[in-house]
Length: 176
Image 1 (tube, rainbow, N blue to C red):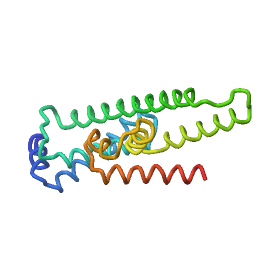
Image 2 (image 1 turned 90 degrees about the horizontal axis):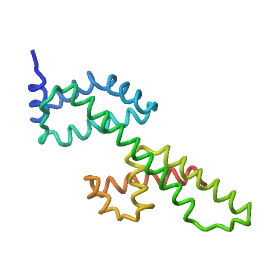
Image 3 (image 1 turned 135 degrees about the vertical axis):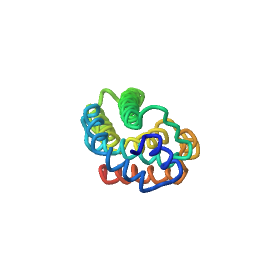
């Protein structure tokens, strides 16, 4: 019988077949678990896919001392909670941005235009995948450079660029 320890060791050594087997046997139940927390299928799938991406990327450092199934479900829970917190930050920032931009309160047309644009921006950000939205907000709202974002998120600058390109394309499609 193959134990969790055997599976972890095989994955640590780069056994892609073992990794794929773990992915296939765990994916659906992990996505369903994430959906119970997030109530969103696409985001749930993205979170589980990202978990497996990180698991494979960092396989040489893999050190799971609990059950493998327990580890995966806990990781999905943590990623889901992080996603919820991130959305709260995005929403809070959107509200702060809305109140910080000066508009002429005596001009109802200007106020309405601003409100509509702000709502469109919030909707577009909410549609973006979690990492893509986070990178966009870090760049545009926090003023971080791509290298700073890459360092903070432990990803490559190319990944930051790709995600920013995806976000900007979505904005162009929605706003133009």
